[in-house]
Length: 136
Image (cartoon, rainbow, N blue to C red; front, side, top):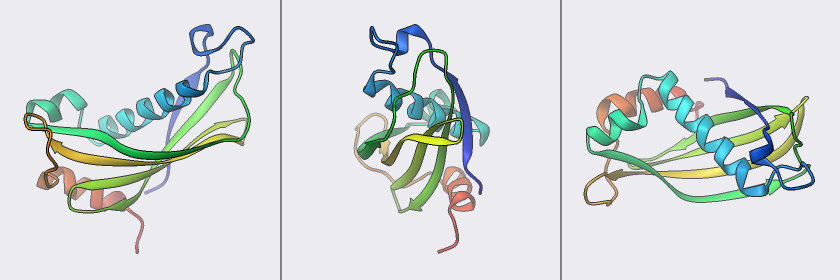
């Protein structure tokens, strides 16, 4: 599967007083891209929770290269790079005009929504995830 791309426009609420995107907002942009990635595959967060499944960030590594600024139109990408029995890894980037501003590796755990304990992927979701990972 190719990279999923989600467009984001930078608003004043995303920036500091100098018009530079506040660092934590890149993570919010990436969260939106992952949510839209799921939606594009027929799985909304609310529907998963209603089925007892919750996806949570387990860990992440992020590198900032250049700042985004007020009114920039960004491309936020999400691509599954690894899948295991109850977790997956996304490679994500925030780009502006072809330049990578920020990139991250995000580990997601599949947990039971009630107990908040790791659980195996539901079969219908695992089938979609498996089709999205690159050949290994």
